[in-house]
Each structure stands twice: as C-alpha cells, then as structure tokens.
Image (cartoon, rainbow, N blue to C red):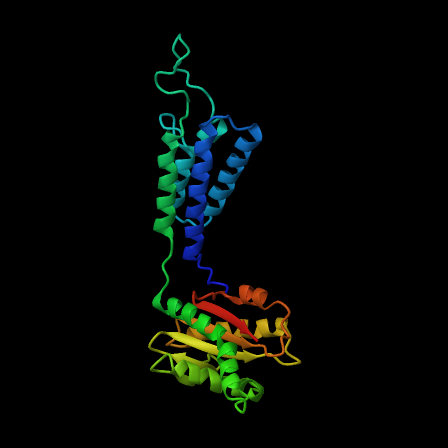
Amino acid sequence: MSSIPAPRPSEFESLVVESEALEQAMSMLQDEPAPTMQEVGQVRRDYRDWHARARRLLVGDAVNRFDDQRDGNVFSPGVSKFLDDPRQESVLKAYDGSFPMGRWQYPFKSVRGRLEKQRSILLEAAPTKSSAETVADELAEVLRRLPTFMQVLQRRREQWRVGEAIADEHDLQVVVEALLRALFDDVRPEDYVPSRAGSNSRVDFVMPEVGVVVETKMTRANLTASKLGEELLVDAGRYPKHPECSAIVALVYDPDQRIENPRGLEGDLTSRTESGLSFVCVVVS
C-alpha cells in the first residue's frame, strides 16, 4: 500500500540503511586486493547520489551541517576528499618504506564519524506521524481486507450474497459503517463540511475521537480511473474545512476491476493535501 509522503519517516530510515551499506563499501576501498578504478568510481557516484537525495529532505541549518560532513575542512577531510582518492598513500613515509602514521593519506576511520553524523542529522529531521495519521494507515490496512470479510460471510452463509447486494455507493456505505462501528466507539455517517458558498457538502464518515474521515467510492461504467482521481482530489480539498478532520482515508471499491492499475492509482492519490492533511487511498475489488 502507498504510504503518505510527508516526506515519510520511512524515507529517512531508508537513507540511513543505505548509508550503512555505503559505509561498508567505502571501508573496503582501502582493503586488499585493491579495488579497480571502476569500483572506486561506483562508490563515489553512489555516495553523491545518496547525499543529493538525502539533502533534499533537509531544511535550514541541517542542510549546512549535512554538507559540512561531506566537505570537511583543511584539518579534517570530509567524505568527498576521501572518495577522491581513497588509496592515496600518506606523505609521512619513512625511509624504509613504512608508514609510521598509517598508510593512507585519508584513512577511512577519519571519515567514518562523518557518515555517522550525517545519519544523526537525518534521524533528527525525520518527521513523526500524528496519531490521526497512524490510525489512518492502520484503518487503510483493515479496509484493504474488506473483500475477504465479505467472502467469508458468503462462503459460510451462501444465502448472504453480500458482494452481489452492493449495487452502489449507498450499499457500500452500509457495509463500511458496520465495519467502522466494530472498530470505533464514535462513528458519524454523512457529516457536513461547511462551504464558503453558503451550501454544505457531506463526507461519508467521521470518527472525531481519532480525527479521521472516511470517504467511499464505487466504480461504475461511466467512471474512469482518471475521473475517479479527479473526484477524490476535489474531495480532498474540502476536508480542511471539517473541524474533526486530521487525516482522510478514501476507499475505492472496484468489484468489476475496471481500474487497470489499482496500485498506481493508490500511489498517485496517497499524498498530503495543500493544507497538510494526510490523504490515504485504498483500492479493493
């Protein structure tokens, strides 16, 4: 399932894991046998790509502190200086050919701490999910199992043709409401969203105790994936006006599998609204 891009905490965590793999690769550049120039170049490119992607997630002073670890200074080389030539031998070479201060001009141990500082900067900047976002993500996973829920009912009681009885969004909302009431104490169906134009529009369900709104959609012959996406985006713009809304879960029921790329639609629509609300889309069939 697509997660909410915030940037997401998982983006920061993934970058930290990548940096640990990069650290391992960098440490091997001064091992024997000596790496090829192509291998050195690949590690250099991988670090630059990682640094650029990580840097885009940072703001303010964190950007400068992050770059400082890459650039270093005259007295303390940064990661980039090490990667320029990791096997450059120390200028402090004895007459007998030994290296009393160590073989390498830029030993990896001198930049290992800089990579750790970059990881710390990323972890400090990682956003934390609000309680509403956490509930929205967990509820989305529950709603993803809605078809299984209905299949069990029909398999155990063939006369209960729940899936076949869902002909439109109103029928769908009956099933969704029953499921929501099994999970939350306070479920308010068809609540109103104030409109600046003086009229009101409705949202399907509100759980004010957790700050989550649920919107349901059902595909039909004249509702294309593009049109459905447009409707959901319009809906998303209404929710900031609802006083109980901190996160939105949009359930799209597609029993006839009219949507060719459901995971792609989820990825396109799961986002943050302009007002900062989390919007999670789930497509089931």
